[in-house]
Length: 325
Image (cartoon, rainbow, N blue to C red):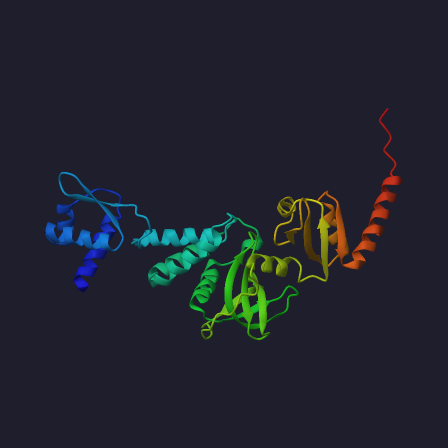
């Protein structure tokens, strides 16, 4: 049985080279009879692979099926795929980061040590031409993804926005990519509450903690939950506005990392955002260039009035420069 399984794997490896394989050549390569090759082809088809038989001289070619069967990669191919997935995991191409992390976690789990070392060596000497917000090690993302899938709790050192750090223990639930940063949604066992952690601010400790039973998610709309946690909650002032413009138009100007935008009727939306500065709150909503109403914070209303008076006075007392003679 073991000999047959090993032969099937070798046969699959040969068939994944894009060419027509005569049955006699496959038999010679594997040291078996053409009849055995025919039986092995039938077994491979039963596993979900599509194998086309050529007319005339019996030959075989691996085809595309309805689903993706397991692939066999040689050493160089496996390293290339791992590097490519790692690059995609921290790229700015929308929609592929999270799936790249999942695929990379599966691949790295089965990479033999010699190939894992080659991947690590290449990453260590590669300088990505990206901003600091994208500086997240793909190995950290895959380690977190594996813990989420395996329902294993994590221990990590975490640096807060004020620069202080402490040891945290958490049950990881989801990884979220905002396009600029990665966030971990997790149940903080020390605080007994849900928390959102920036991945670039944490340093994992090994080994992982014990397995846990998943809890109900912190919100029905996880994207909305994350947006509120990173654009509103951390700040001193929490602004809430009614904006006289469609939600999709405002959302295109205010990404989820900056504000939460919710439809509130035909051509109207509610915008929530946060800041440590009243001036900044006023600037963010004023730069939209559409009418708006302030609901909170109450001190922002008086602040906008004072700011408006200063701007009007500055325009009133402006003296245009003399025209050249």
